[in-house]
Length: 245
Image (cartoon, rainbow, N blue to C red; front, side, top):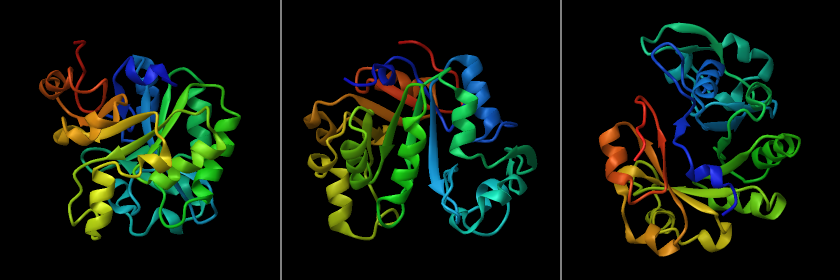
């Protein structure tokens, strides 16, 4: 498989964040580097089409401010301080992907989730442009098979994965889309190298049928990690220190 590192060591979900180091912050990424963990992170576009590292589409949960990441200019990112576990502002702001790549600089691998909204193309293109000049190990994943198809067509040597779970109506209103994504029907479009599936929904026949390597997300205890050790090839974890099994 391309990207054997994906199977070798637990991957820190949104960096190795703590009560004081917010998720998807430069502090959480530095902490992961210090502990030697690969990093999972999320990317979106700002209003001026800069690729930034941020999970939610809205700003409220992580910054305490109203609005959407897609509606702010990248020049204003430093004004959006990320909140700690007590919902207090920290010194860390919403980083660009370029800042994260400069910080990590190949010290640990990166697993980048493409949070595409609407038409596939611009976020994928901008991310690919940055990754082409990056020397470290990395991979991409997305819930959107067509996003991963983009990387198949434009960066075929880059490891790519499909994210999935047992979607609810809250996740997706369209029942046909829920079923197709849950059962990995569109793998024929994306041709992924690995599957990232919700830990609570493993094992299942849809994943087993693919015969692809499996990452389980998001694992939050060693008890869950132990349950998955014969089901998944690796875990994406947070809020605990994984043991070796």
